[in-house]
Amino acid sequence: MINTLILLLMKPNSIKYFIPVLAGVFIALHFQSCDVIDGSTRENNASIDTTCTFDADTTPIRKKVLMEDYTGYLCGNCPQAGIYLNDTLAPIYGDSLVVISVHAAFFAIPCGLPGGACPGTQPAGSFQTDFRCPAGEDWYDQFNIPTNPLGLVNRAAYGTSNFFVPKSKWATKINDEFAVAPEAKIRIKNTYDPATRNLRICIESKFLSSVIDTFNLQVVLIEDSLIDWQLWYNHSPEYVPDYIHRHVLRQSVNGSFGPTIASGNISAGQTVVNGYNLTLNSSWAAPNCKVVAFIYDADNYRVLQVEEADVIE
Image (cartoon, one colour):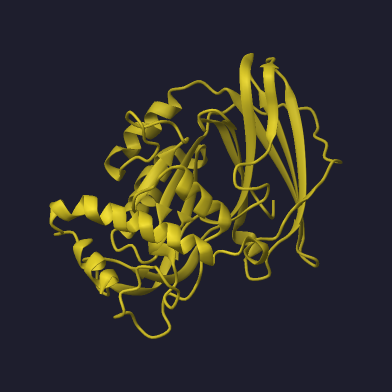
């Protein structure tokens, strides 16, 4: 009954006075849903590789911006946000805009599991794939995402106390971040063995100016063009069996918030190399997978630089 009421009220013509109530319900159900995630079975832990090396860098410095789309396949308003991001905004910036779609919390819980948004009127056998991962759930909590769709742009503060940005402000916030000069540079070198599915990830992080602070490196895997179910309001059919899910967060390589790679007095040109080895999940299509790495300020989460590279380069 509660799930049905919530889904009805989330329709485009919902009564606005219910929104604050629903936000509280979403948050409460989200915290309940986190218990079903088992990190030991949902993610393959990566081992540290200390043998990574890089040739001299002759490539130009480019500013890149990280856009995180917090979504879920039972969020009926999310497809329009995803289309706007991937078909309107992304072509403007090309590969300078790095997108991660984070399926987490209430609207991402598969039908049949408790605490989710499953309406009870969905086609038999639909919404069974679990796109969640521990890192996505942790991010959703850390940034206090109240519902979907909402986005984070370089994890920069928005307003007085929030990180999440409404769809109507995505373009403005992305442009604001591109206006900031590059503060770091990242290079990624992937080596993939299709026979063993072993993936070796080497990452070089270079700071471009002197600064006193603490910075972490986050490394994740995403998979593009996953075909699965999606609830889509005001669309025929409302339950879409072959929706294309873009840039889906699959797992973190180095924990939900990554290790510290530099702290204290950091000089311009300071360079850090990190390496990881892991076995790519057998159900993921390696040609559609990418490694995304970003450096962020550990004090306020603001992303200095982001980079991505195909698993099969």
